Image 1: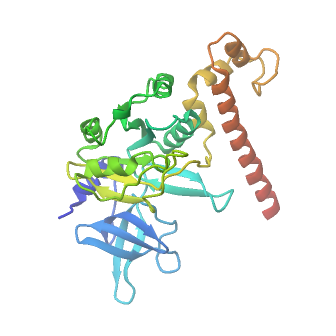
Image 2: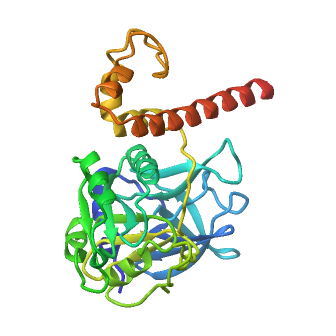
Image 3: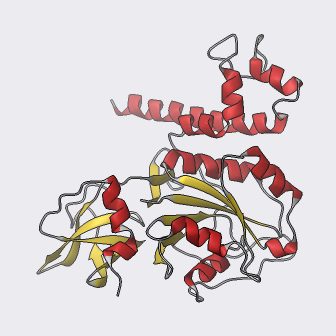
Length: 328
């Protein structure tokens, strides 16, 4: 039987003092068109969650702790969403200038890459910004290590020595105990990565059984099919919880300027020495960042990726300001 402790309630209460009303507590496993599947000590229930039928003023996300009421006419409803201690937020892909909470109340963000395809440094950096902005701890995870460790992987983890890294193999079981140790007894890990990166196999190993379908990667382009179609919270038998997400190749950032600076610490540190406070690090005289690139202290490709992220967020800010002016 699932208990609140198994779902991470003890961990949540360490971070939030919660006064409950007349309802009972549960945790959102899945979100589905105005309804949510909620795990609770009463078992798994389906509750209404859209704003027209409930009192909650924000939309629930997978991982949310919620207070549930039972209405004699409508059944179970989400009365309110309890405060989130972390949230992975992206730009809503359907609404360019709107935020979307992907998952909440996670402690660890597993950024998954596979040894059977080129390691995408730009994608790793983008996911690291998401993690940094969420208040959760990032972990770099390599799957299919039995195929060999790519040189690009070594360069990736060398570039972020402060971020824990784990190399895993579904065939040999390598690395699984390390992940279990990180999340046990009551922490929550979310996995981010593109389709075919081995997330589903990793989930099955952590769960101790095949709970997700896995798929072969197409040989011609190393791309996989989406085997996870919705974000779902699972309770791991050895302790802790896991949220798997559909494969994503790209994700828009949201309100992440400070997180970018914290991920690109070397560039941010050099930027403080620039002659001009608003230096763009492209052509200005007295630019310490350009000097660092020319002397080899900063990689030019890394600077280019940093500037692209900064440009994306600057454009987002300008569009939001334009919307505000139009709405007046």
